[in-house]
Image (tube, rainbow, N blue to C red; front, top):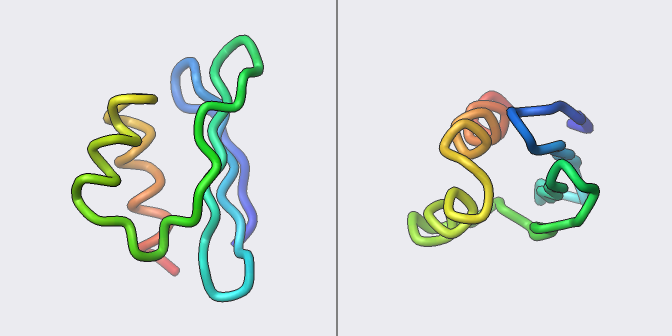
Length: 68
């Protein structure tokens, strides 16, 4: 899975790095705000990602990860 998409003011890249998906998110000014592996993301990890981005970003990424 290698995909890039925009959600609101955020540009999101989700790609496989071996057996773990890596999430990278930039804001509307091009500043990278998240770059981490998410295969074992805990609920608190998702909450932190949501605080840095938006609920829509978390929802879309979780849908894509679960579909794999």
